[in-house]
Image 1 (cartoon, rainbow, N blue to C red):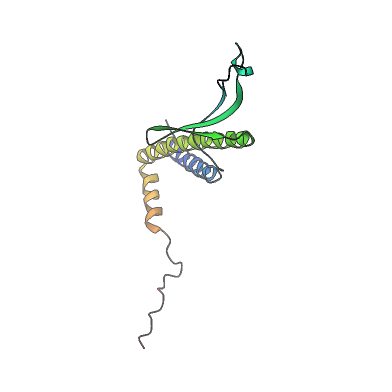
Image 2 (spheres, rainbow, N blue to C red):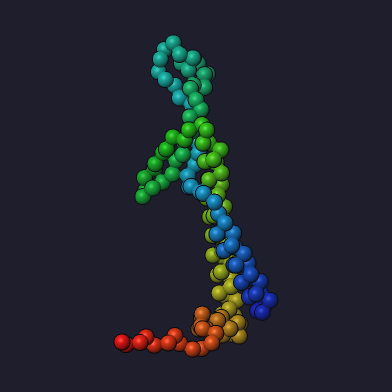
Length: 142
C-alpha cells in the first residue's frame, strides 16, 4: 500500500522524470530488422551449391501498417543507424508503459488521500493567473 503523503510526492516526481525522459527520445522507428541471404537461381553460381548461404546479407525492415506487413530494404551502410532507431522505439514504448503505470498509481493514491486530491484540484483551478490581478487597459474608441 502507498503511504499517502510521501507516496503521492514520490509518484509525482517519478511521473515528471519519465516525461522528461520521453521528451529526450531521439529518432525512432518501429519494426524488425532482418538479415537475409538469397539464391539467384543461376545453376553455375556459388549460391546454388549445397549448403551455401547464398548472396547477402540483405537487410530488411518489416513492420505492420494498417494491418498489412510492409517491408523496406535497408542499405548496409544504414544498418547500425536503423538498429539505434529501433532501440529508441523500444525505449519509448517502455517509458510510455512505465509512465502510464506510475500515473495510474498516482491517481489511485490521490483517491485514497482526500487532502492530496483537494490540493491537486486547487492547483488545476489556479492555473496561470496574472500576479498583479489587473486586467489590460481598455482600447481607445477613437
